[in-house]
Amino acid sequence: MTPAAAARTGSRPLSQVLAAFREGAISLDQIAEQTGLPGTIVRTSVAHLIRMGRIEAKELSMGCPGGGCASCASAHADGTPGCGATGPSATRRGPVLVQLSLRRSVS
Image (tube, rainbow, N blue to C red; front, top):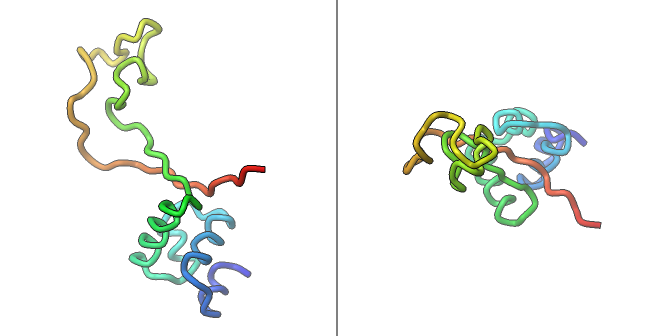
């Protein structure tokens, strides 16, 4: 059953969101479109599924990493910054890009 069909039959929102992920949805908007759920319910469901450990949320790097210059993708082999900065930024500002994915079950 597709997430959209599940929405019409009264399936639970968490199940619908998980089904949408399994069927390849890659954004909250796609989940809302596939399930017919309002965006607020999709966001709340995703947040709950993250807390439950059913979905993983991974922050994608923007700006300086929390681990300092040595953990930066542009760092030199000796750990010095590759971007020309004198060191990591003291503050991280702006939007944060988060990659959501289904947790793989441990066999």
